[in-house]
Amino acid sequence: MTLRPIPVLLSALCLQAAPPDLVVPPADALRTPSGVTYRVIQAGKGDARPAPGGVVRVHFTGWGADGAVFANTRALDEAPYLGLDRLMPGMREMLLAMAVGEQRRVWLPEAQAFGGAKGRPAGAVVMDLELLDTMPPPAQAPAEVAAPPADATVLRSGLAFKVLRPGTGKAHPVPASWVSVHYTGWTTDGKMFDSSLTKGVSVPLQLKGTIPGWVEGLQLMVEGERRRFWIPEKLAYRGARGMPPGMLVFDVELVRISQ
Image 1: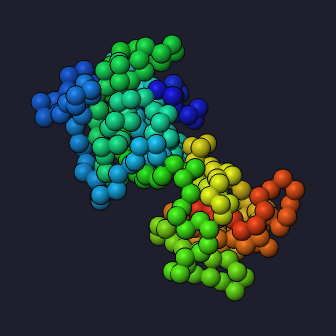
Image 2: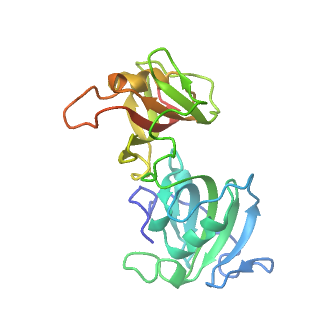
Image 3: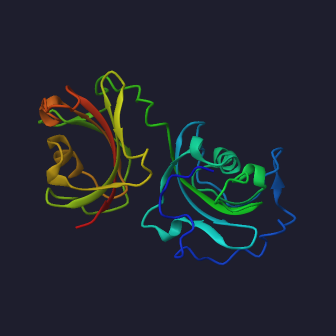
């Protein structure tokens, strides 16, 4: 398993009691041809499922054969985004089969877990997985990257946007606000030039320190919301040296308003 180096592995703060069925799966557990055993704890809420090579937001807790916790994302402020291609085989297999909102307990034989990697738990492991969200690989540009589509909202400034996912919050940030965001940015020829998804965790920043298109656009958002912005050059980097020129497209998720 090659989980990103987020501070969830082998943390002394990640203590959680091992499940009673750690060693022996219950009678109603199912087994896949690869040897992974699983039980659905909670069904998903829709049909959305991860695609191979995509990115998932997932909460997980993992126990070694001795009952010791080796990972617990619930000890973090937010669930991380993880690239499916970077996960151990059994975890990837399970997530690809899950719907958003689904929770599973999975029993992974060593070959589908860490595979005897040095410094990792040996033998079989047990994991509780909760799939919270799924997204395409950040390098895969949207089909509408070249120009705003007809159903996009265009503001007087020239900034255009579409709401990709409604938020759950009520407050809006102001220019002086500190926020945490996830984002991916593309040029209009479809080239990705930056993405927080490859880092796994959201990026904290003060809104007034970003490009004008972000300052204007993020003030329209609430926590949990995701929007796609088409930002004309005059609201983007405005010819700044070393930065991509022209109109830029950003998918932005407002994770948190800190203050």
